[in-house]
Image (cartoon, rainbow, N blue to C red; front, side, top):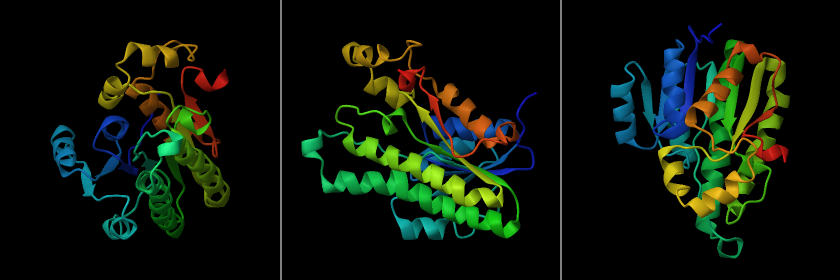
Length: 244
């Protein structure tokens, strides 16, 4: 049976490119009304042309006050995907305050804030809901030059579990997906060096990186009623990387 989100309203952050953009189109194809949030107006304009009927919100999630204002009249939301994220790589001894603060603001703080806004209105409406946070295999393994990124994703995993604990009594499920390298446009560029890619691929039993569809399908499953008894989980989408 195909997953259907007919009659549901979904909000996806980081919707302009990659995983977020494909999640928006997949949710629309499955019958959901979708709100796409991005800081790039150009990306939202092209998404609206590609996927008619999608609502759009343009805001920089690193700005707490602007995000609150932008979502103040968002309306009812049944499904939330916290996908927005940044990956600024620096060796540990060269990490700057600017990169640290921006990374935590987008990768962790925005997920907390957007989830608060959405969960409060779910509770007020007395309806069940589902939230998926897009994390990474980097939450659970040390990766060279990823000290800040790894730290943000580790924080996001733990936030996911606390949200599941506290929101569960209100029938709101919260889970994370933890992908390996994903072959978005950015991923193909970032991992185009055969030597760099080979070192990572040698640690993945299935011998390949994830396609965007692999991650999107996992997100849809965790949003759907087919995962009705799953909450507080961090689902690896990594070809076995974390198992070894």
